[in-house]
Image 1: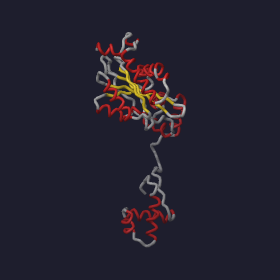
Image 2: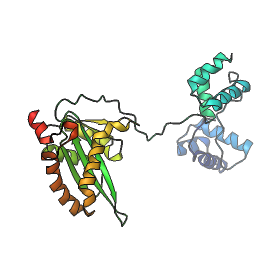
Image 3: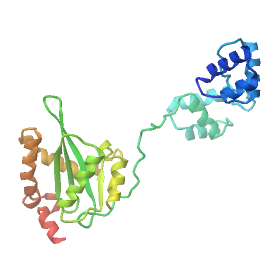
Image 4: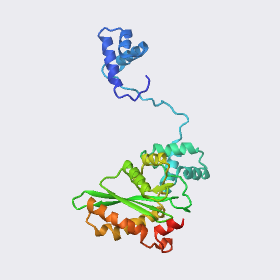
Length: 292
């Protein structure tokens, strides 16, 4: 009997055999259910042996596996893996050095069958391999992020932030919700206010900077790069700006959308035009942009 994963097929087999018992011809039953006549004949024979009613699906496992690994080899693989928790390639090489004849694929299958491997999450995004460009002009690389605020009533406020690594020109907006679409709109509004063109924007792996965000920026002619995993210094500039923005502006402001908007409207021009930055030799972002 052919193997299937359809959970409803045992019931269908039983109904087909029952119609044959009621006097229907196997040809008529086959036409009614959409199967070949020989299939109905096999089901009827199976029912006479196993009993009428639901006919279960038989296992597809073979009766014999002459090329299967011996129990001693399987135990050696498991023992080697449990000892140091090394990967399958290392386990295979250690077994070969001990004189155990086994292939790498057999080791990998055995570890997976015994649930001794780390399974990669289906929802985990692949690591970004986009190279980091040299920051030699304004707009060559910008970093974007979101700052989360939890209010006393349990609600949240979010502040989008963005900074240019060359000139330290910065922009920020407060929103009540974040999403990939909202992130794209924020970057495009920042581009409209910046006196230079954005070439690449770097972000972390937050859901608001997902694959949709990457494609949307690409359509607008802006490249997107994710920061490297477990490399905290990759987003050092935007994290420092977030701290400065909170210490010098937002922490001194009532946490509401209206008050945040009013505070940012006054602070951002000061940050760009008047505030001296140690990272750019005690200049303001405006002075750096004028010289570039």
